[in-house]
Image (tube, rainbow, N blue to C red; front, side):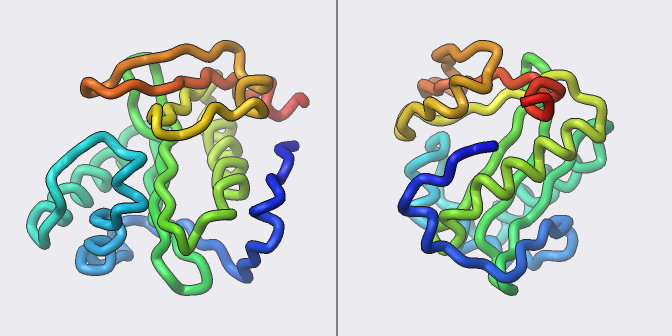
Length: 170
């Protein structure tokens, strides 16, 4: 069980939905993927426009169709607040979670749901890459089989290697 940091305790949500990307309009994703609070924790890329966000969404839809993968839009109380996915990684699969400020506090619930997905898909291990703009998370380090500094697309990350079965055994 992950502890809830004090600043998350005031977060309330009545309904968290994981929607297929095909159920979300590209124009609804546009402000989310261009939000500076979101972008500062992602690999640098040019701002999206209507055409490029559609291409990005189509790519995520293709990933969602791969065996052992799942990509979903995150909707809280009817508002699009982010996206998440279990997607291919050079070492297996990674968990990706991108949440706008309106969804901060839902991360643990999202992460736990995704670990359930990983288990149901038969994954033995998942990776969780956090850009070096993020603090180290001791609770993730304690639950990981290993933690290492990695470089992806020229940026530094802390990568947590998580055993799916061990996650549920603790």
